Image 1 (cartoon, rainbow, N blue to C red):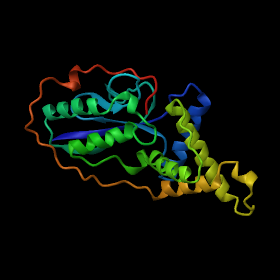
Image 2 (image 1 turned 90 degrees about the horizontal axis):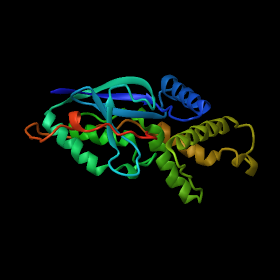
Image 3 (image 1 turned 120 degrees about the vertical axis):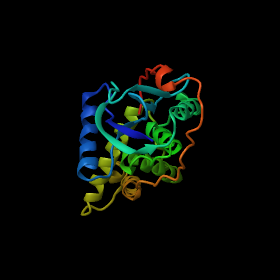
Image 4 (image 1 turned 45 degrees about the horizontal axis):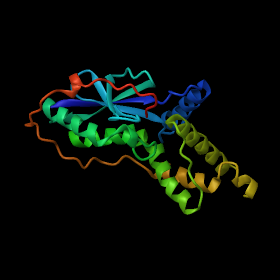
Amino acid sequence: MREVVLHVYDVTNSDSEKTNNTILQINRIFKDRIGLGGIFHSAVQVYGEEEWSFGFCENGSGVFSCPIGKNPMYTYRERIVLGETECSIATVNRILRELSREWPGHSYDLLSRNCNHFCDVLCERLGVPKLPGWVNRFANAGDTAVVVAENTAVKFRQAKTEIVNASRVAYRFMAGLASKNQTSQPESPSNQTRGGPTFQGTWFKNIISAGAKPSSSESTSSHDTGDGSPLQNQKSAEQSTRL
């Protein structure tokens, strides 16, 4: 049995200090005070002194590793012990090789295929519980909101970089919350253009209702034999933008 640890970071990889401070403030309010969630990067550690995650790149695999708690793109927040895996190191190496093929960097999507989704899949194959619901709640709620928006002919515009997307989600969340508090003012077309209260209200409801899902994974056999160790041999990918 080997301990599986989740490492969580605040997403502070923007060139704008104002954007980074805004995300830190949102994470403090909506995670630390309210317990809903925030904008986070995550990585999984199992065997060795490296953590494994996923991010965008134009060519090759988006799966990469770095020293635990030392990702230079983000601000380290906390470690969470998810459980213990029965997988041998050879089995873990095989799983990582498979995921490296299944998760190319160009397939990255902020809302539906980000680093937290990758960590969920890795944990499932390791036979441990998935990530706590708050880690990826903003993305999950946002994904549902996209469907609602498309049905009402309101397009959720995806930015070219993940940090722009993340900050927009955060600002829209704040605007939606503020609009819900203005119950004394009648809704008007001018009010609707400032934050879209109908759209934001649905998105906020999704965030509150979304919770941690229990893992349905089964323990992976520990009798597999591998030829080479991604934990030791794979080079850490340098990514310009990751989440």
